[in-house]
Length: 125
Image (cartoon, rainbow, N blue to C red; front, side, top):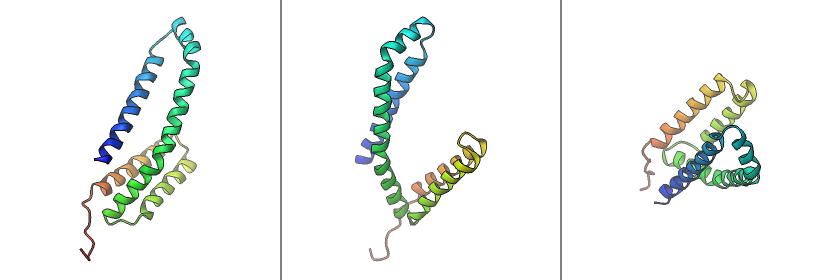
């Protein structure tokens, strides 16, 4: 049950960010500059809150993935190799490139497949 609440909290925060960013970008002309002056500090506070939230969920997300990899029978270092390859791809090809995008899609699919594998029951049980 806690996993679903965790995922729900992430979806709610991302939905709030999308609504606020859509509202801020949907206004044009003089109204946009007036809104920018009045919401400038508010948007900055929201961005700082989003960064704090991202750092706060990074470690629990990583531990959930490592546990899921171990339950599926893969060693934890496979995930770390995936992250290392992603980091190397970002350095080699640059972040916004087609090769890096393809690499991130492949890495995401590998993670999806491994997390959907059934749990292996240890030999002693």
